[in-house]
Amino acid sequence: MRRFLEEAWRHCKPIGATGDGVDVIAGCDLDGARAAAKGAKTTVDRGLVTTRASDHADFARGFTDAIARHRHWEREP
Image (cartoon, rainbow, N blue to C red; front, side, top):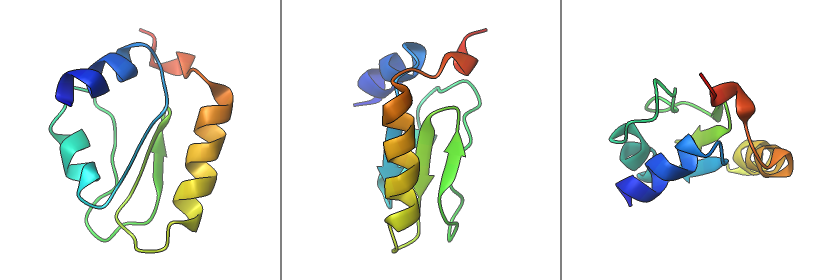
C-alpha cells in the first residue's frame, strides 16, 4: 500500500483518505504533505484530500475537485 501511495504522489495523482486511512498516509513519504490532524475536518494539500471528521460531505467535494484536475503539477520540484 505504501509504495502505491508514494507512486501516486510522485505521479501527481489525487489521493484521498478518511479516518484510519489518514494514519496510513502519514506513514508514507509524500514530500511534506499535510494530512488532517486528529479531530480536524477536511484538509486539502496539493491533491491530497484527507479528513478525520464523520461528516464526509466536505471530503467528497474536495476529492471530486482533486479528481477533476487529474494531476496536481504543483507537486513537481
